[in-house]
Image (cartoon, one colour):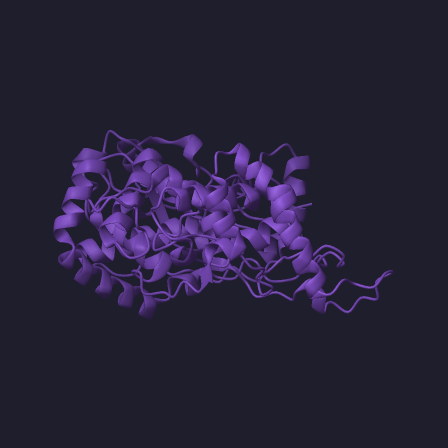
Length: 419
């Protein structure tokens, strides 16, 4: 689901294959011809799969009769058109994360979150009692995903899912999601015309894909419908159910910004190197706020997290941090949620340490560094040009072995040294 949600809020505008300047060997079909093929695909290919999944013919025919192709979606491959061109990895992938935590935006979301915490205090208390997930965490996710439900959901989900199932680069995935959307309609939780979502097919205020709706959506307001479009209690409780089922540990925090002493290596990052918070504290790691770690956390496990190496804020996080990442598999996303939740709950502000200048590395540069580290026997996880914790940790270990001060982050100054 995490990847689906990531697509939901990062959906980029790209050039449609139709507009690519290519002289095809054969004439491209017209839009009308593709539309005709789409109707044939619905009856010939989609219906047998939907029928096998238990969808009734009445619901299928009624829903798909009004489904239409949405030509504005990204990454489409209409039959008969040339495939989308591969875009070169030339963009700077590793500029400072600072803009992600835009302070004016964070303050505005926090102010709204605090007002909503008071408005929905009764519902949030019931939800936390049942699922164990604190209200500020749920409010932070709600705020990040759809601006507390204020963001416009401009797409009819069936159109998006049907278009992507018929002519996207991930047809099988979206076909499954489309059939799950038909299950939602068959359950009468929502009418097909009211099933609104993003350009990636993510639904409602929590931005659930249909498969996640079926697993995690709940009816919290007691009206007999799981309504994540207009019911705030249903939306918040559904997010809480998701977090609980993904392993949220009741009574624990998400994590703490810390300061790591110079003598403690940053190359100890990752969930596989967890140890009690008390053990980290014994090395001299302290909370950036100057407060002591909560006594209830001292015997529980924590993990070092340095998303920008020594160029940015440093953290000890709990397993709940990785539950937040189940919503969107990004360290920065989970830190955004954690920081916003703290602002809502405690009135706190930005992280103490600034996000420093990490240069403008290309993804291809990072990939080259990863391949070099692998050749030297280091575990970088997946060599994909993205600096995950295993890449950061391996880089720090190599720096230490090479007699360099570990920074645990790829930067331009290391390109010539790592050979």
